[in-house]
Length: 74
Image (cartoon, rainbow, N blue to C red; front, side, top):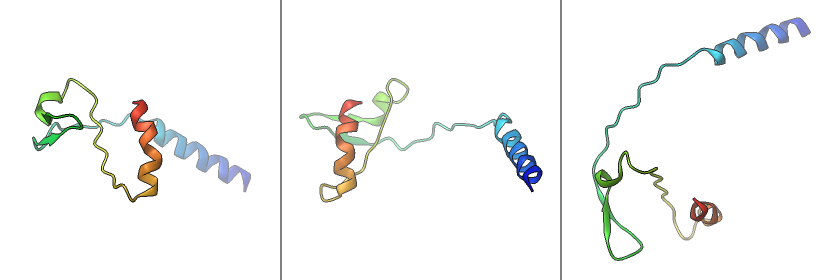
């Protein structure tokens, strides 16, 4: 039985080590959102220049409120 589990472990570890070719498409819908300050920002202005994190949250969501300090650190 132990040999069987070792065989399964080796099999799955070999699957995970294979290189996967993935294609990242840069298709997006350009939109404009207001910022916390007085101006708004278009997605096309920052694509390829900065890391973009879109976080959708609600003030009544306890899990959303827990992640706010971590997002501020970013």
